[in-house]
Image (cartoon, rainbow, N blue to C red; front, side):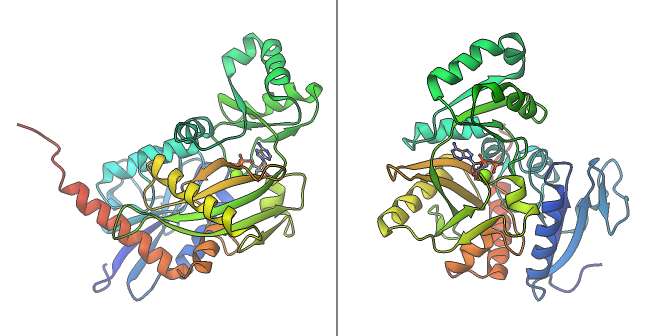
Length: 343
Ligand SMILES: Nc1ncnc2c1ncn2[C@@H]1O[C@H](COP(=O)(O)OP(=O)(O)O)[C@@H](O)[C@H]1O
Ligand SMILES: [Mg+2]
């Protein structure tokens, strides 16, 4: 039953990705901070097999009848099949408003290769990298290894093209370790990136679509200082002291403004809607800023960078969630006005 005048928000959590557990923590936080005077919360869990649960009951039939019992969907799920455009495609088909990027930006944002190509097209530097597909690797591992040596030099980072949370990523220091790292990355994706390891400061910025115009709101700059060799899964989630978050980042004002301009450009070039966290590198020796990656459904846990950056920029956790839902409703209204048939 609908509570009087409240917007019914379905909060999706879990998901069949490697980031299932992170999502549960993010969603718990989102539900805690959603403005209860305006919103009624309907939690929906997705288990690791992809089954959807309403109120802990697996009562979603083949035609998902519950789509009709709420007003807006807030996906708080990360990674494959959640953040990569597939879920967004399903949500488009429900014809209900949903929070965050649409199909296109979600899919682009998830692919570390395609998003970098678009950034380069806009003149934004990225760390030099090579791409290898699985069949190519199986056919000719040796010549690819040779190319890594000649074009990138060691150390390098080996990454699956479409994961998050540092899953499947290895820092490789010598040629002898390359094969194992690439094979490991191919467990998670059919496309792998091998990237030159830069000596960097890692910074992150939160971007939020404006309700007024096409100019996104860009947060202050935050810095991540991993206490591990790099910002690995352990540093992110299992080691409580794995990384230090500094807000604002202790960098010069000039670098801050450059980083904010790049984050804004990335949000627009990748066709983002709603929100995104833009992760950049500052090369220590040159002060050059590089685009690393974008996260279209950033972490929303108590210690996550995205809500913290927004808070430091004057937008509280609750205000942020309300803003995101208002954006979803606005986009939906506009899309419904579009002509879908032409006679
Ligand atoms: N080219 C690089 N140079 C230096 N460090 C890197 C590079 N690529 C990745 N890293 C390190 O690995 C971490 C995870 O890589 P990233 O591409 O951000 O993947 P994920 O999507 O899993 O977060 C980064 O936060 C950083 O610590
Ligand atoms: Mg990252």
